[in-house]
Image (tube, rainbow, N blue to C red; front, side, top):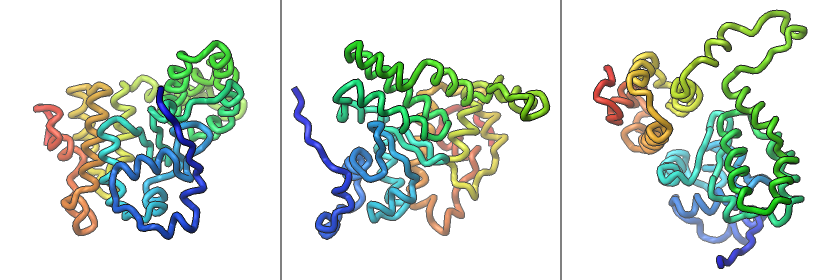
Length: 265
């Protein structure tokens, strides 16, 4: 049986703790901070903060933070959506199991306050799957806190197939939303995750990159590998020198990743 130790998030703001010698940037310290830091919320494993805020709290440079976070991401220990300042640690539920069904019910408010995004749906599914090994009381608590209708709503919002009230809008559902609802998952991933994660000043060759992806239709595993490689590159010296002057366009970076021999220049 595993032993557990409670750690208060107030530790990170304690004056005596801050007076201690600080750790140089490393993935182990970052992992411990993500599990117990002041940006955690009632939902285990959920962090509401962006890269800059997390780096500043640790006293690290942004580049150092990205380099260490890339290690954690590469091992599937964390899923970020930096565009909405949200991070999820899938295994955190194991380290912080709910003590009673009432705790699960209390998660509802924290969950409702999360920004609508694909990661929010992943969090919902992870909690549901985790509680399947608990008793019936916990599963009923989950159904109260996060009902099925909420999951359906999240899925609908993520794919932009929401019903727009004609009384408010005064028109039909925009054709742009209809078109997006028919997009393959990897194209939505490209627009919602890959592009926002790419250095903003070098978001060129977008059409080239997307056309290349259409040829190979990357599955979820391939997409995770692409983002992991991107996060590692963003922290590298070559990408950071001279304010990112030598960061390649998106098409070139995908070709360098070697995900397909058909990637175009």
